[in-house]
Image (cartoon, rainbow, N blue to C red; front, side):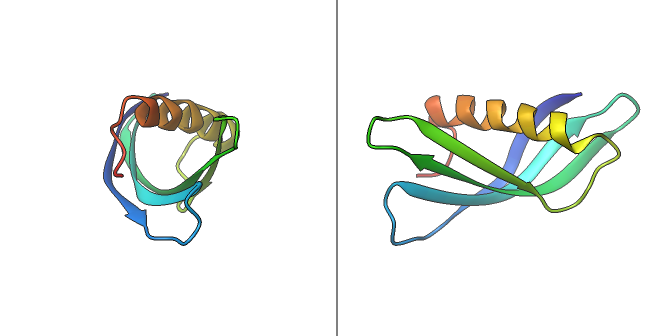
Length: 87
């Protein structure tokens, strides 16, 4: 399973500056198909700069969810560090 991209990512406005909430579509390359899976996720930054990512898969794909969420967290963290998420 590969995560090809996150598309249609939008940031939800919030009052807490260290908690950012997003929603979007994850494009997944599965062994037999390519699927678009709606997700929502949040990135919380601690006072020391450590990021904690929580991911919710809104539609269950034909793939185990635990490895999917682990891969999404890694992809989201990389995307955030590279500045590809909406500010």
